Image (cartoon, rainbow, N blue to C red; front, side, top):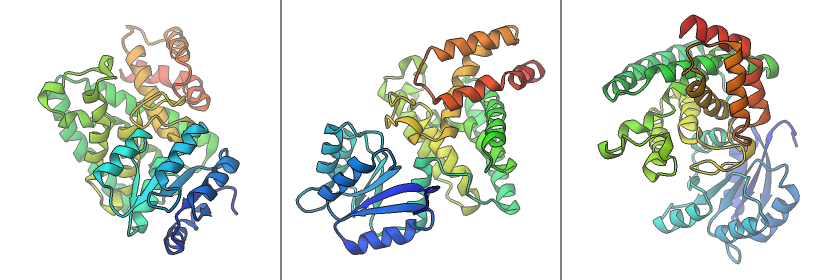
Length: 340
């Protein structure tokens, strides 16, 4: 078992289905198996600190997938991402899943690329994806074309285009420091991940006109929260292989940039590092720019004040991500004074 890999538990009473999923996952994940709900619960209770995701069959004899979820909740195990395995995501199953804050389904028959893409997006695995020069060029062209369309929407509805451009720049600063500290991220990947932040609120484009006026003050409003799903769906319309890296990262940011490290965000109430570090950065730079940009002078004193304000919201992002922002003071202040 490779301890450097994410650990996945497959729960399915069909040995054939388990073998198919295992063959898809075994090269990139540590895979554990359980052939029924009771055995799954034993594994989950024993391995809860080391499990990164669960692939859970809905239809199993004796103890089905939803019963497993109910017992997990009774044991206060709510921080492990769960993908429900089903031949058909019926309306009834979707409604039951929503009660457990689960909106991820893996459909049978399994599609290898789809299974891996969805798992990696949920677990924030992007650094291992290789990008050819051709992929990079096509992705940049796609981003530039999409930006022009989105900028027109922002201008037409008096949205602050500058805010999203500044978010992109801040993301690049934080990601560059993150890459220097942790390795594994190429410069082209840093650029592409940074650009994804520009589109985090793109879901507002497709809201009915009557709801386009909702603001961050209306975060509990169902219409406001729906922009996360809509944004993900807009981005995932582009499924071309060369742009798969950008699509994965951007869709995840659209969907989860309002999640919180303490699990109190929306729409999925993702807890801890089950929300990718990149999407946590997106949330943080969004909040930072809204506070810092409004000052007439962008100096270190104002930076420290904004940091102190953000620090009061404990649990918004991981300590690691917050430290990246704090440690980037010099570069951020220089950027605002040179570019803003």
